[in-house]
Image (cartoon, rainbow, N blue to C red; front, side, top):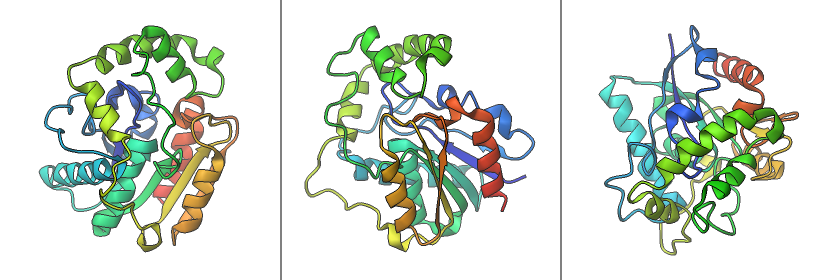
Length: 247
């Protein structure tokens, strides 16, 4: 059974378990899934001092995933990378060690769009602010009210852990003199760029440019979905991912 590494998104207070809860069962029987907490989130906040800017964090997370593969004795895996954390890490890994990845799916622009104009949640670290931040990630909040309320409590606790704010702000800092962005034109791995039609975080055009820049890039816009495609359309998401990775 092929191994699928699920790399979560980059919102405040996120962790792997809560990010992928809506789709983990959908991959059972088709893939063996690994879903690590990425550096700066969940159980991986400590030891990240000195990283600054999105490209430095993406490279560090790519190295983290390579260490995970080595630890499990995995020579080659598939990737799903969500948004500005997991998606950017997936692209960095494809650039760094293409022989370790068969195929990859990235979501929500994979961090290739502009930096947010302000830091989500932490400029106003309240429960109401967290709920508003999470609400923007789905197409229709009324459909997911119970889930959003539950995640608000969980992610508020995690976002307020010691050093979590400093790590988060460092991820989105404009770091002059840091490592350059990944050269997308040199990534030879087949990549599916998925984007929600109703994404309120990044416009669809970001993934259009991403897919167009990748030599073997493919674009799929999911009708009726927001930034959290896997939450708004979980069955469609697992079907599309499974078909692409198994092609």
